[in-house]
Length: 126
Length: 399
Image (cartoon, rainbow over all chains, first blue to last red; front, side, top):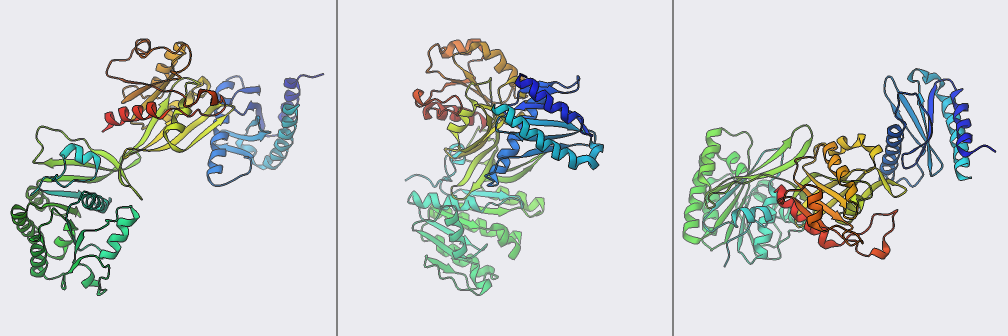
């Protein structure tokens, strides 16, 4: 039987076949990399910590507006890099580096991300 | 009986109140308000049993009193008002307070006569709101001559005066003669640097206090509560699990933490109100992987609380490193030795030595309010004594 990490990696592998997703990672809610599949020049620890900070800060900001629902995700965009982070259950975050030029593919990316995050949540809860 | 007060802690400490026969000018730039200083001075002097006269031409007595009420400064009794406003609007004053009405506020002679006659009734304090409007109605020379008449009355009756003034770009020579006509000037200005910091006040002149330099302080006018000395950003940093979030939650009301699994992952923020001071606390995460946030969180801070775990001297080098990474080295600092009630906690002098702290640097122990209730996933409530001591020590350095 596959370990959790292997199962998670399978999910990330399926994402890598979606056009426009350059890399992806599963991160714990407190900012530790669980399964990073990032380019070599990226420090997975810092990346994971900053994604978790961003998600946590966004969640707190929404709560301060009175939202009582769970944060779904955060997009961080610049001209040459885009990160889409979605909550994958209470304990994990799925972060994807997306090619900013792949805007036309964004619908598919959202659907795949949604599917993958549910899968990750299920694996994490096992 | 004591002299009239400012009712603003910092000014009363620096200037020892307002001695009789003295005139204090509150000079504000147009972007900031000075009226709250008036409310606070009036309220506190009436509370202290002083007889106060308000010369009012800025607004009606009713709305003045209702503004005072918003700040919780409504005087219970004893405020006499000369109303030099209502006759302009034609709406008669009906506040029920003791009011003298000026029938024609455009008549210099009537304004002076009624004000000076009223002063003969023996007041402890005159508050004039606002002097700039008097100048705008008439001219600077009238304003100055009225001041010198007021001075004569002060000599005879022992009254002190507080003059509220907004500096609408008057000519410098007029400002200079106004400043030399009064005994003390407190400037109220806005600060706009890279960020808008808010407002500050500073004593720029005082002829009854010698050999003292006065510092300027940031403030906020709070409803209710009035003038509070305000510190917009105080950093709380230190190694992981030292108790930064606990400190912030214990020191402030409505603190928010961005935390997961018992550790701060983005920041903590708390807003505190302590002995007339207001401050916003910003707490950093402690774990190394969040270090890229440190510089960001430390920017523009004006003071630091460094929180360390008294039982973990092996973390002390990390504590120093965090001071460096937040670029907070050299700011006014108080070191908090938390968990001083745990077994194995180092003594203060041991901590001082191991952290290489000079003797002048404040070092305060903090304790859990109830050790049995400590939950590693929640900020711990710390005992008030340690928190208050730490806040007092830092605020003393900042003012």
